[in-house]
Image (cartoon, rainbow over all chains, first blue to last red; front, top):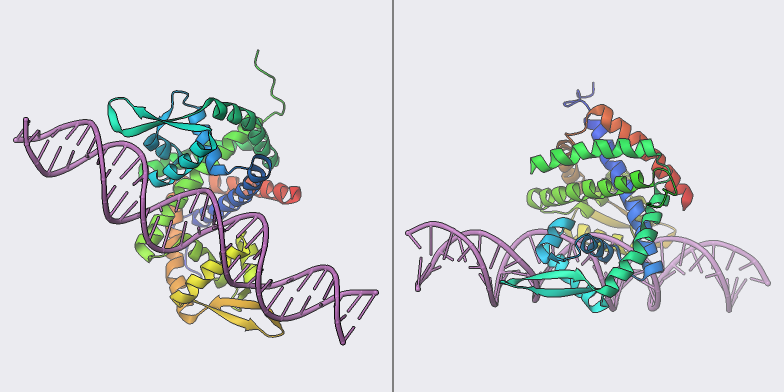
Length: 153
Length: 153
DNA sequence: ATCAAAATATTTAGGCTTGAAATATATTCA
DNA sequence: TGAATATATTTCAAGCCTAAATATTTTGAT
């Protein structure tokens, strides 16, 4: 008497979403707490520093916000705080007075280098339930999902 | 000359975390926008209503916050807004004047019923890249992860 | 060369989120 | 009984986040 499934796999996909949300919340909560207690910092600041660490010559504000998939206004605030922490600096872009290049200061590079490995260790520990094979399986499947999602937009 | 891998699978697990974050951000952004444009509402409010819909007799504030894995103070604010929207009500708990039971109003039940199927459709669409088999694979693997994470705490 | 359109970043208002402190009520047990 | 402790919720300050509005600068079509 129940309605037929309109699209095979619909239920399975909804279960995936619930699981993704759960894993994400647990991990974010754990990482946030460790960042706060051990580094006196936050995940968003770490994410910005990680993006800048990959681009030693620096990035524009707009490049940062699209790399991290957050709004421009958001990046403005986080970079403000990182600047007042002394780990990031804003530089003028020659030839374009609208824009800024943001990059890690020397202190910021050292701080990030010291923290990155520790951060990776936390994640490795939180995902101990995952064998290498499991991990590769998930990565491969999720890669397809992201591809499809980017098409949809 | 590079350092040996201290823990096999470490790199694979880090890649999984990056992917999980990416999928989550894309989906949350998409769902947030649809909630706003089509329902004039938000994801946190929807999540609270979904939790309440599963418990017709209502839930305590503290049960809500642990079900959703967020802080008590957070739930207070969201429930305040849902109450002023007229979709949720706070009831006294006989025998314990510290606590409240929160539950959907009649209007809230109707509103949620109308929206839940549409919301599920959005998720199904966003996860179209996932076959039923893929979805079941991911769910099974992530279940192990969450189990391990709950042990760790 | 001009000027409308597009691009870059910031500001603003409002909502979400946390952790800590405050408030109110219940329970325990000496 | 009554003081200490525990539990339930709210309040608060600070940070994160978005969408929309604003200011400035650049681009491109004419």
